[in-house]
Length: 367
Image (cartoon, rainbow, N blue to C red):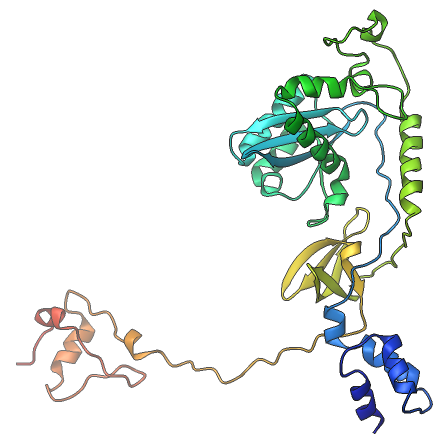
């Protein structure tokens, strides 16, 4: 009786609070509230359609101690042209190159052009696009001896440095007829809160533009910017965390989770944890996915195992049962020829052998 009442209470798949409220209006038994919570937590339909995880506190990226040591890369589209963008984590110095095509070779050659001007970075950060995941790019990282780090797919915030710079560069392209001059002015403008421009932090000096500038600013100066960068980053984290972030609990190997797929959720199992912040490998419907922690939600519900039907038909269709007849008489064809014309020749499985008419002249007839 209690189970039937629980089914009626949760018939419309309302939340825990509303189901308890409905139940208290008409029934009661010891432990009823706990049974309602347990039933809803195990409901597959409720688990597959639920809200996204709350925002987590900002994860501060480890900052390098010199320019062009760690760079981020991304590919974006503007007016039917594809661009490769890189930005330096230390100085916020952007570089863009128009790509002739989207092949790995084109991306590699563009990066080589940058490396020839500024040197080989220690680490390159990118998404998991096919250009970066190819064998050619892996060979490129080994040849030039730098670390290639990727972040969770479908979570652009992981590569926030590049994503933010893409927005800035797109605005510059929209507003200016000369993108090169616009980029030069951006690189030459002081970054708020740091007191220096990307060109000063990257090259150690300002760039000469059409705008009059003091000669001292065009000369290189030694400055320690890492502490200012860290203070600026912590200030942004403090502002971001004020919006009501919440740290999600850790996941262990083997945990049952729900994998967010657009606006729905799918059952998955945690396979392993990637040695990067909040990145996991999960298995779902026979496939493995790499996802950020914010797209995974631990669940008590278990997806029922699909039963495999044992009613298989292993018989070969008659259309494929015809066997190939050799052009030259073989021992088998001679044995077939010895049979009487009225006797039907059969295979080992008992199926009749029908010789195609076009091969009749090659089969020995009985004398």
